[in-house]
Image: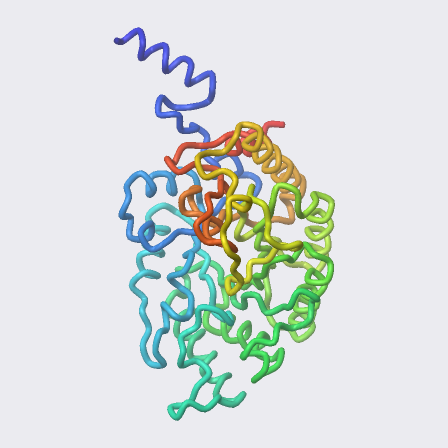
Length: 371
């Protein structure tokens, strides 16, 4: 038995793996001289309900984002009620393991509490009252975690696809000043915290230019903004490496850090011509839209690994401009893409499979550091 164990250890060492087939070099260690490696965690992971998942999070990542627990409907469900239990646990987990914490998200038109825009009589509030409510929300939350949460997604998804402002209720009541106020209030509550604007499809030229307009507008008014969060919900083909590189360079020219905040790569066919992360959109499922319910073919797994490798080679090239890369979910079984934009599909978007084992894509990403 000892001979067999010795042989397994020797083979594992050659492969760069432990006997349990977990890579000895974790993501956070491989990229320690490049940028932070983050993961979005759900409520059960924040509560450390699964020891294997907790161990994987701690061994692989050095930045944490709450997937849903810090969104308005959960952390501020009623006007005078705040629920900090999960955020406290997130901060404690990060603090115990020397991890960077991102507060996600302060102002977003989705997953809001129903009271936000309404008076006691059910009428729509005016700009003055909305500004007051945003200030209370931000100053209370950011103030509580001053010095404990390192950075905030201050405003999320305020742009339409053509780069104009999204016609959200925030915008309809307050115009673009709600963005300016949100950043001001966040900075006042914690002057040391990094402040970001976060959105999807920010590689697309029109929306990219809209985000640059937001950055430049804030800077022109001497309002602090430290980074742009590019939600990287991508596919095997789109966006192109060339377009990603152009966006990195253009954002960096504004003087802010570039973050890839919600990285996952879908291998499934898209029911539309252009990608989106608008959670209000859905389609019906059918076999053509769910081609791999029983496992991913080797050829597609190779495609996914190659796609991740291309992306991380680019990230490494521009590591002086990139502050963090965060995966949106720990493993394939938890990916939101299993249910968006079509519920019930089986997708394979991340670096760890449903059994928490590293995939070919994981090894391909690690290898880019050595290439």
